[in-house]
Image 1 (cartoon, rainbow, N blue to C red):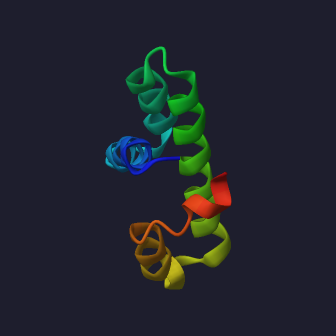
Image 2: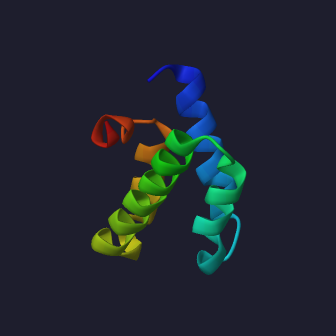
Length: 78
């Protein structure tokens, strides 16, 4: 995946995080339009980060955010 595509996915998920949890997946779907790959990867990335937060607990949320901001999670997705 090239840097431009990664940024597109990351920006989409960042925007979705600004919404309430019950609206995020629908937002990603709508924003992706006909780009099935973007929708799939956006939802996958969102669910992965959500699961990481649940498993890690609140005390590690800042650490997880730092890792995500460094884009190291991209290796886990593909």
